[in-house]
Length: 257
Image 1 (cartoon, one colour):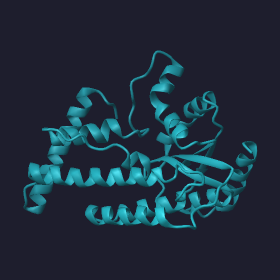
Image 2 (image 1 turned 45 degrees about the vertical axis):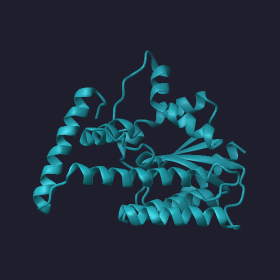
Image 3 (image 1 turned 90 degrees about the vertical axis):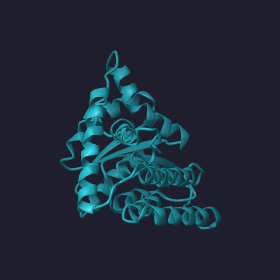
Image 4 (image 1 turned 180 degrees about the horizontal axis):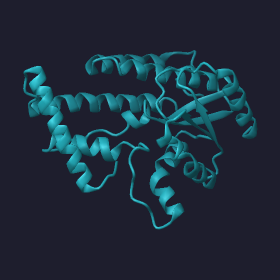
């Protein structure tokens, strides 16, 4: 849960142990060339996902947040090479279609815990907003950082998953003071907001996902300091109570109209 050198070394040893047990279970060695090929295939997928997100920088975005999440959920249950082909096909189709999302007055960033179903994002967009970027575990966090291929492949994996993935489960070095600490932890969110021209942020978290809940006060302070209105939305995993959530989202959008 930290990014110290000793932590990364510990995680690397755990990955090597995991690799050994996989080899014993499968009866086949995971050779350095095969591991390098797998890393390259997944890095290609990450690059394609970033290209897909770039299509949402336009106003209106060429693809909705709902459609993007549907694609990413499909990728997570698809072999990587097939997923890459799906992504290339989807990007080509989005660039050529004439019936994309309509322009809305609100361009939102959605932050928070994993979403493996689309009703919440779909509801937000139905309220008259374009969800143009996210910072969620099933979105940019998982796909944004690539593995820096080196002679130490397992070490590169450890570095990527522990240090490069910006998740609240990892404690980072504190700054010289409160605001310096917030800048160190959340500057990448500011970059997302600037690059995707965001004018509001919805901080969503599943009930009892405490690691995300603990981040909300500091992140709200940081977003307020850079002039971005933010709203915290706690919800249940089942998504059965969308009606009251819709009312709260509509009220938030009215405050930034």
